[in-house]
Image (cartoon, rainbow, N blue to C red):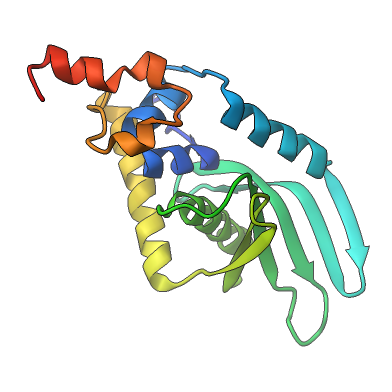
Length: 202
């Protein structure tokens, strides 16, 4: 019997996992996807901002839609933007930048996605990625994110959890926090309240 290749988790799916494990499983394992206003707006903003390619401004190279991966972690995906400093002082430092609609939320899902990109860049180059940025269209604000030891550890835990959920082949239960469900495009498929009622839960 030939062993199958290990599962590669799309980096964008780590964002879904951190928001809701059930949403991650529905999208990544079961291939479910529903388009609502929030999903459509995010997709259109990405299309309007990012055309793949490389441009230079001064001592900075800007890579758009850059493919990154980690063989060690089993993840892969696209970074919206990676800025590469070519100055001798910075030694070719890479800085990932993720674009998101809306404003910064209460959860770390965007930070986890950004840090996963940084981990990939570090593995590919052997260098250190000390920080990244998340640009929120809603606030027109570019937030600096330190790629700290704590964030790297949290991101690695998320990746391990993603692989475990895929291997378990079992749909996780709905969230307890219905506030997250309110704007979720998959709520009509997930049916969190209905599932709990059928299970006899309040």
